[in-house]
Image 1 (cartoon, rainbow, N blue to C red):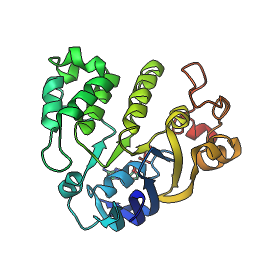
Image 2: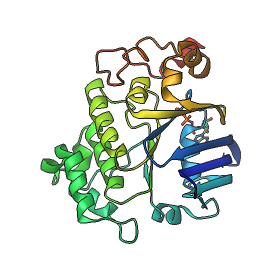
Image 3: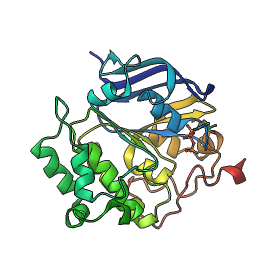
Image 4: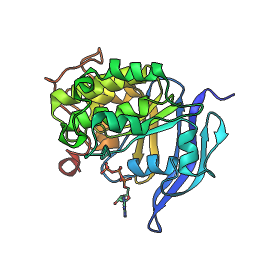
Length: 265
Ligand SMILES: Nc1ncnc2c1ncn2[C@@H]1O[C@H](COP(=O)(O)OP(=O)(O)OP(=O)(O)O)[C@@H](O)[C@H]1O
């Protein structure tokens, strides 16, 4: 039996007939955070969507050693894959409680009272806001709702796309803390541009460039090597890989891959 919860081999994906992911192979072990990095537009989001079967794809996708690349999205989700999309996708007109209730599932990976308690423990800020419309929440709080929805179910794996994008540094910290807590309960494949968040959360990194995996390895190895960061991601890495503890706060310079791309090229 495979020890990886997810294995992807030779994944290619198309949007509107055009191939945007050419050859992605990656593995997600059964614990911890595996981060996907890369410059803007290299195919990170498309890789997650292809794994879920949301866009046309070829190649192999194995969940718990079982091929799922021939299956429809809803079947893959039923097998225990939670997705937190980049745009968060909360129902703005519904309350927080309604958003959460809509996410509850039955079946083998479904919601249990324990999962509801876990979500309350992980997201205490949402409890007093249960009757507030989700559209009136801050970006960070909406991110929490989106993450909470996936944690209500007993998922095998979470796919989380740029959860800190566009958030203020203090809120980035909150979201990172929630993700760290979530990662203690379920493995996460995380697309993230903020190298400090990577440093805090990820054990492993997969770097994608032009639709292909160009590097896989321990997060520490990448973060400790400014030349490698510059070469693979096109950013200067001052302030990353120097704290040693992996718990750097909001003071240190944030190094966001996409943001410095243009200037660094
Ligand atoms: N709906 C779409 N229609 C046409 N092309 C698309 C669409 N969505 C993405 N693409 C193209 O697919 C390629 C990969 O995009 P994708 O969003 O997967 O990259 P990404 O690495 O996640 O980028 P970012 O970091 O900017 O979110 C890009 O060239 C993009 O322009």
